[in-house]
Image 1 (cartoon, rainbow, N blue to C red):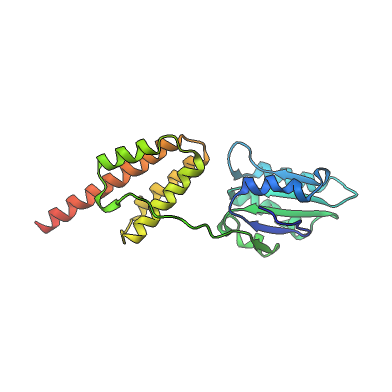
Image 2: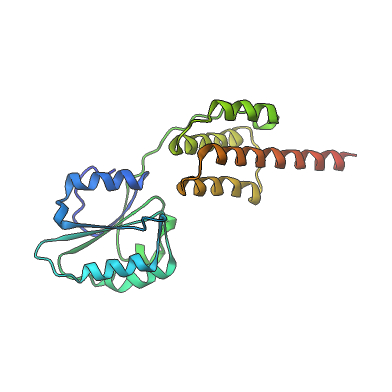
Length: 219
């Protein structure tokens, strides 16, 4: 969330893109801002980049602030913006709003300074015992959390990851993919309880496979 007006072209790394967008009107006149994002997906595409360039060349007597917002930015979209970022038209300020520095190419960062507005959010470890995970525990956990929203589901996924770290459980690349896939599905508004079910059953299946492998190896 913005705490004050940003006057120069900048890259803002934030915790929540939507909350930051909501706070823009507090500091900027509506007539002076343009918010450009992909409303269907949180992926900034070439079509959004073209919209930025077109908007930047529309003359304005006052400073115009163009906000480029996205969870991810396609490489071709970023490359198409390089020239205008290096030589912006008069009275144009570009402000990127992203959640991670990895969203943008180094060539973008070389042209525009970034400001880290992310806050550390304390995460509580999950009540689940991942080492002793079974169908019964999964059933009761899902029953307890069947009415959670997207934000709460994200917190639960983060808390499970924390518990895995605390219990010193090693995850391979495929197992880590369960978590990144779950977050992406939440962003696409998939029902949270369905995502948690998929994640926990995947972890249980992986745990059982590893256990069988260990027992086989021991024998």
